[in-house]
Image (cartoon, rainbow, N blue to C red):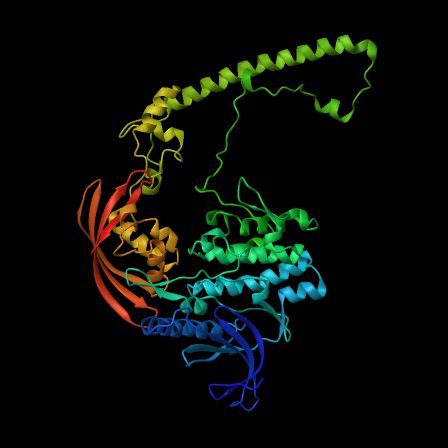
Length: 519
């Protein structure tokens, strides 16, 4: 194939083609080594001057991201150059000599558990690095992971951002948006298919890739539990340990909140060898001395230590004696338990009645005072301000004193605003979107395409936002007005300062503030 691109790159062969364009293997004729490289030819899906300008801006931005990623991580291809020619866009990247995971399975068969663990341990740090740059790959699959010949390391290729820029269109309101969803069916989760990718979407894709390597089954060949939406795959990989199977199950959970929150968390689960879902509220089991009562005596017969060490043969003619003796032992234990129970109760009552605060007592910290009723100790419910504890064994008094405490400590409007922008800086766009009131989400002027418009701004144009100052203008139990001084650090390199007035509403159902308007 005799084709010279940009008067420099001699095309050797076509590696692939699709709706976005073609991919070539080429030689750089202006380098002494004539090094080989991969050239991706990309064409916009719409051809008009307005769209072309938008595509050009996005293409340059995404190319700069690829340069940053590949320049700092040796398991991501290096970007050599990018250029435009005849209305089409070209990306020139490092040629990775090796085999994709798909070819590995075809040539060598399925991966063993140890081989898969080694692969994941080498891949997850790359994913952690990519996410730290606030980038979602969006197309992780066996064809986009190459095992490099020279060192056996996995290399992550074909990021979806540049392809997405080719799908830029202008909607009916005249605003730019993306008309395509990047990803491969089966390897991308439902939220990504709906145009709302998250960091955990990449973890899902990596989990499905791992299952293919273990089972040889493409995602479309696997069944889905109709009740939960979870993928049924274990019967195709019976030799996998329960620990690894649990890790993969969590990685491919249907709902994003049930997956690993970060690549680091999944890596730690692999290295430690355990996987668990942390509780929503940290809980420490208190030490409880069981109170012996007739109601909680185990339904078993006590046996003496001697009987355990030297069991005697049971004779048929002694059965009646054994029954009588057993009855006497059980009866004696029950009687003793009742007496002990009354004694313990009496001692506890005397102790509480006689207890008074002393000078060596440590006052509760503010954190302890703010603990919600669900996590506070029962004894604090009976503490009277400025006096001695008033013990009560009555359930009614405990419930009444508990209900007198506040249900939760309401966050301040200032803190809410700080938390809102912190979520955006962490790339938690869906979580930040959920902090908008339904009426504000449906604001056609700001969000003509709903969440996609929101994501296009915060995820596509803003690199980060710094909250310089927050002040409350007015506030009551239901509404609040807050002024925020912000500095936007755009992905284009610009820095913009702005003053925003946020109107907040108290969301009773979710027990939090919600943004109802911004000016």
